[in-house]
Image 1: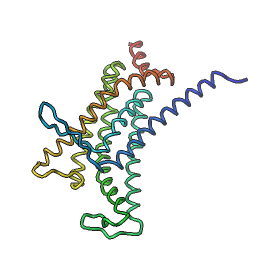
Image 2 (image 1 turned 180 degrees about the vertical axis):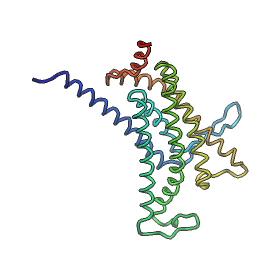
Image 3 (image 1 turned 45 degrees about the horizontal axis):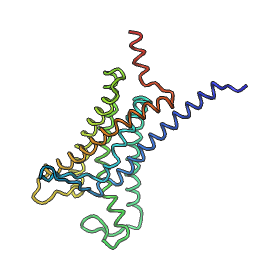
Image 4 (image 1 turned 90 degrees about the horizontal axis):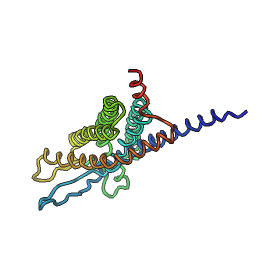
Length: 261
């Protein structure tokens, strides 16, 4: 006889794994894209406010970055801290894999003659690859350090706030963890990239290093901060819908504790 209860349970389990794979895949795919694009282009979004020019410059690689924090927040809320940390570690392995492929691509023959800037001649077809390789190496090593620090801060702070508020105030743990971790990330990735690969972040003539780096740090953080605040509503809607769709109750553990107290 067909067991309808078991069949329904299998469907729910399948749904949970598919949604997890989608969130993890979006996280890892975005991470790979932003590391390859990285610092290949600076986007100038400077604007005038009250007659004063406000510098606002972001790296092209930072554009999809807020999605990674939204994904880990969804995974943290729906699947728990252990799975969120697992995805973060897999992201680190992905960074290492990207670096390995870039190294291998440059190590295999033929070996072009390199100019003083460490790149092949302008007429050499392989110059584009070596330019991307150079930028990505510097940016990825910097982002690996910043990424690990920021993502673990995000996951840890998310669950710390969740524990303190006993599963309530979803907006606070979503924004509190993300805004803090993204500040850590912005400071780390800009400063490490500059000192590890100085030519990747040019400082304008007459501008101090501190001023130039602060513009980049604050611009990149402002972009991430606005993105984090804007994703609060989608996060609320997503958690509500996915909790029903996956038949999960993120706040169940806290209600159990209150019941036994």
